[in-house]
Image 1 (tube, rainbow, N blue to C red):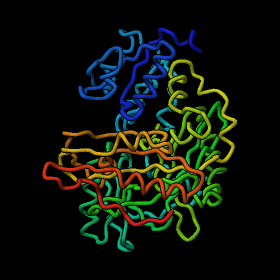
Image 2 (image 1 turned 45 degrees about the horizontal axis):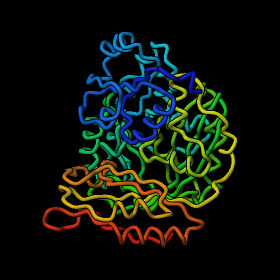
Image 3 (image 1 turned 90 degrees about the horizontal axis):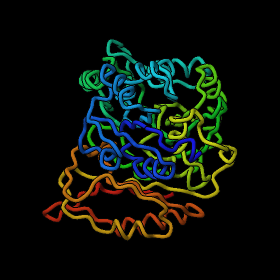
Length: 412
């Protein structure tokens, strides 16, 4: 592959949480990284070979840019809103892009995806509209086309719902909202990876949550692999595979998360892109398949990775991703993070914030300080390792007050 990729010019949108993987692959294969985005402090701008501070959602700017700069392919690891605004004009290029506008609309518009679930025999969460008279609270209101917890509210009354609908519409590119029955029960997550039109399901996951901050949805404290509910989750594999077959999805990855209520798995959300939870690091550690490299290879050659056969095997170990949440404030002092990164059972660590940074999104996805990736032989070991890590970590304001969210009680 080295000779095939050497000298290729790859444009990159976003990719904040995969900078290490992208730069390592590019250096290994002699790829020229061309970062594009109008946020000067974006991490990819700091490591790319060429930087262009442009609005990557503007078709009139980007299509001439691709031609003028002799771009050979595009890796878009941006948030959902950027992909939604750019997927239409990217279909007009000759790039090997993993998703079409129609596929994105079905999978990433929450209303359309719910309709697809019903059509292909998957359980669907009861929906409401603000004008309904028989709403059974609590409900959860969210934009039909945004992720990262933005614009999402849990409501216990009609007055709360009215405010939540306005908030959701404000955070939607199409000006629409989805209101669903608020379900309680075990969380689950899985992914479908597609290669040449064939489906693979590389992992299952369950989760321990922080307490909710205000009316925002609860955020992850510990992600656990594999899920203890794998047999229930697997009932979704066959209908999901049929949906992707009909949509004509040849390559790529899509994450699904949901709630198991009364033994029934309901999908709440999905992400047809490299997900922010970085579950691909677990698969890379266990199976040796790097999903980020698959996307990079596909962008420049049209081939999505090599041998996926190990993805059909269960995970060989137990894994956990520890998500450290923060309160709002300015970080003055961080202690213990270097010691944690050197622990033998910590195989990876990704830090979002550093000393001097201001936290403004406590209780949302953006309020996570770091993700710590842990491997173990069993859940008992995992719990011991997590307790050791938590005892080492401190994040404080200038007055010495801790910025760490209160850890929930848990037993793995």
